[in-house]
Figure 1: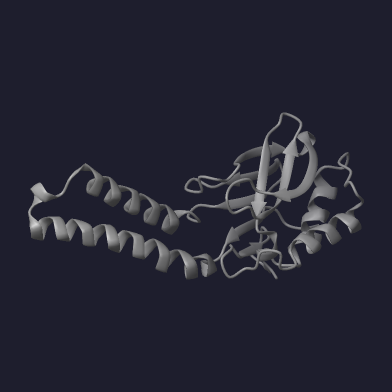
Figure 2 (figure 1 turned 180 degrees about the vertical axis):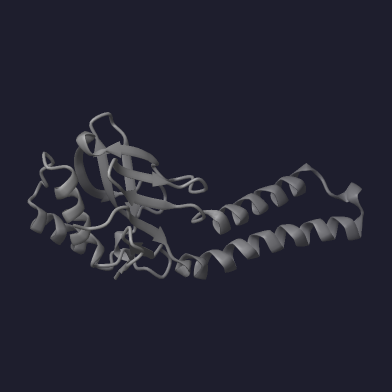
Amino acid sequence: MIPLPLVLEPTAHYLLLALPLGGSLIAFGGYLIWQARRLGWSQFGPRQWGACAVMGALGGTLLVQPVGWRFSLDRDGLSLSAPFDLSAKTGEIRWEELQTIRFGWSSGRHATPTVEFVGRTGTALAIQVPEGVPDAYWPVLIAVIRNNAPDFRFTPDADRWLANVRAVAEGEYGTLVGWTYTAHDGEGRQIR
């Protein structure tokens, strides 16, 4: 029996992209404010202030997006908490409500592969960029689902389901710009 909760969290790898990009946006916004101070505040119109606000907001969002992100399987069900990830589908699905797990692509300009857990009430929790998830996590996830949701049936069966995850995870997207994750069980043992 696997000690619960089974937890998946982002690693600091995400910051390899977020720090330079988010930091640059914030720095450029700061530069514009410095220029306004140097040239005189009256030279700084609403468009410039708007540009500073947008750059600061985008840069800040990039930096804090993974903070508090946590996908967890416990004795009650599955849950995803992502307070600063504006694109995350968050919530909880009780074991008896788990209806399907599907593979797909997130919507938007830069679609990324996802694994989505859907409940009977319509609640959907998604893990984006599954190639960043440790390979050993998926068999453990299957075992936890089998132990806690005995009525749930993998479609296709669990072996083919696992093959689908691995196929989606094989470099369609790449982990340089995506998230990578760390996983551990209820006793703190890392799953690699």
